[in-house]
Figure: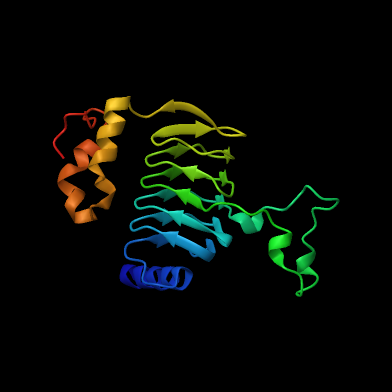
Length: 202
């Protein structure tokens, strides 16, 4: 039965990603549409919506994306400088959608990012490697690498590491390793008693 469940999960992920998932785990209830790229080993919780419309959404490796998260692209951002904010292209297919949505840069989620349930990532935002986005946060601005942010709008609460450690972790690029290559390094990755010091041997 377990193998059947795993096989169904792989098929669902294939349909959503339009390619073999390669260790990605995507809930059957998640919605992923458009120009969306998801890195290896990332998982996405139930009812999360990621739509790449009029701009790309790129998500790195080993990311943990909770339930009911929304990650937006330019296609979800209405133009509001004019008299109306209504997307009239929904009534008339001859109209150009780009005239009714804000143009913007791609939305980028780095590697090893944890996004808590019910968080919203606005279009064009870049969330740096190793960051944590608190549950229910509304992220409207770029998030520095290894920051913990929370609130509406989200603000930096603190950094996960001191500057030398941040630099060393960034230089290590551990997220480029596959799972089997990381096994021997789990203590440094998950234990608060064995931090990745600037002089750690990676």
